[in-house]
Image (cartoon, rainbow, N blue to C red):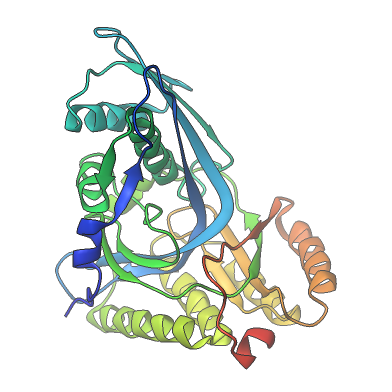
Amino acid sequence: MERETGTRDSTVRERCAAGLPRRPGGIGVGTAFGTFGELLQGALPERDGDFLVTLPVERNTVATFRPGPAGGGLRVDPPHKGKALRLAGMVLAELGEEPSGFLSIESALPEGKGMASSSADLVATARAVTGALGAELSCRRLETMLARIEPTDGVLYPGVVAFHHCSVRLRQRMASPPPMTVVAVDEGGQIDTVAFNRIPKPFTTRQHVEYARLLDELSQALEEGDAVTVGAIATRSAALNQALNPKLTLEPMIRLCSEYGGLGVVNAHSGTTLGILLLDSAPDHAVRLEALTRACRELTGSVAVHRVLTFDAAPDHPRWSTV
């Protein structure tokens, strides 16, 4: 059975895109954070079972929208952001406005790497358009629009969420993680998320059941402040995903994680990157971070460090300070 307690009603009330009172010639600015892959991604033993659990990071997309005159048409910069342009038109139509204006998008999220760059573009766009018009858009309505464009990550909601990315709907809100850092490697290239999500999932019935168990355990671990279990579940999810998008560096990253006291290996399941989770409150965190970054650079040559977003005070659990 789906665990949607507390989400179905809240998505009706909550506004995922809302602006100030409209001003003539107003410009709307919207932002959306990205993710570093997912703490968990797989398929549950139910209809529409594809799901993911987000891991928000301190990188984002900023969209700016300036409404134009009637008949002026819609434009976007950079020009290849066609999905964002399409959504801008859909939001304007929803609000009874002319499809006219200029949309610009600036993003710190690389494309095709598994960091929710496309999802962030779309959510930031919706927020920019409604901001320019002084309008509001509910999360559920935005989900419906996004579903018409592509599978979408759960970045329209603050915090960590379990999200059905193919049907674009919230499943469950989860507790905020502790302050963590991701030391990430990139195996190169790009992956088309839409094409990836068309791949038949080779998971067995036993694995579907395992994903359901892992989702329950992850929710409980975040609620209880069990950072060790959070890391272990992320590593297991990365291993299970080898059947879909194998990473050559997974085993070396697992070894480095153990050597440098990491919590676990987090995977961009539909991307090209892997990362090691480090707890910021762990002893000698700065020393470990520097040493691990060097070791990862020797592994692939392409390394980035990301800060995990926290949306409320992390629970005061002893295990937040251990590895």
